[in-house]
Image 1 (cartoon, helix red, strand yellow):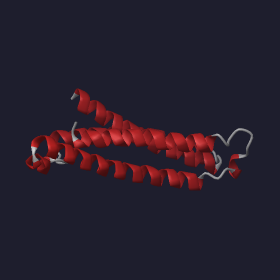
Image 2: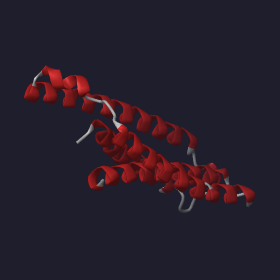
Image 3: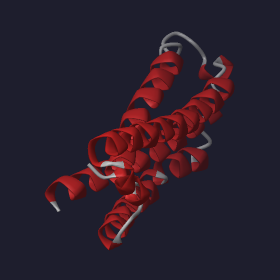
Length: 150
């Protein structure tokens, strides 16, 4: 498994777990409560920071672990190629980014519609957050499928 594919898996898992925890935590407060009183800004910022930090840390740990395994199994000479990308990696990354862009473009219509309808900020912010999550997950899944199927 290439380092780029490993990163795609990391982004997919982090992009699924962190928003699931955030949305479960925040949306559990919605029933029977006025959404204007729900504190969602700080948890959203924390979820965003945790997702970014976890992705970085897990990518670094994966690279270190892969480097150690490569060094052990094939000698230290093979570790110099670790983390390099080729044309296939760049094409797969580009395909994933395009897919994420299209999902974000379509999904961002929901918060725009909510803003035009003068909905509560809670719903606008969370629908925009969900649009970003869907775009990131789509991008990661498209890259994983491309690596697995070609």
